[in-house]
Length: 161
Image 1: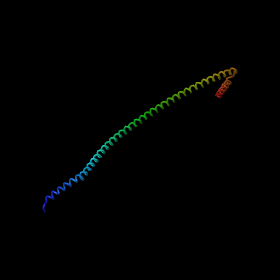
Image 2 (image 1 turned 90 degrees about the vertical axis):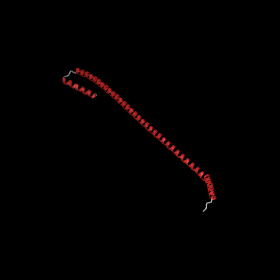
Image 3 (image 1 turned 180 degrees about the horizontal axis):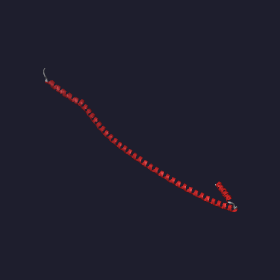
Image 4 (image 1 turned 135 degrees about the vertical axis):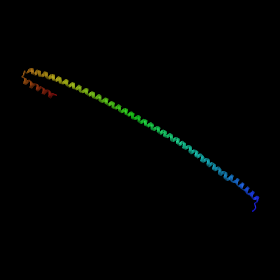
């Protein structure tokens, strides 16, 4: 087997031409597409990382806002409880004052009616005494008749009431 240098040179030239053609038309565009794909994937990774960080930030903000709303709602509930307690105490105090006022008024009315009844009874007793005295004077009667007369007048007074 003999080596022919022309074949060797021809193979090298053919290989070089083939390498240049493949590099220009096959590998070059393929590498460009792969580079574009690498950039696209890198951009998507970077974008997804930014979105993840943004989502975490928004989640933290929402949790903070939710906590603030819960705190505010708790404060509002506490204020409402305090207000209702204060209002109920005020209503109870007003009711007690009104009951005391009505009781005092009723006691005054009872006392007034009692005084009126005593006064009326005194005037009736006075009138009866005068009437009994005049009847006794008209009839000078004995002690037994006088006692019967007093009992009769007392019965009449008892019947008039």
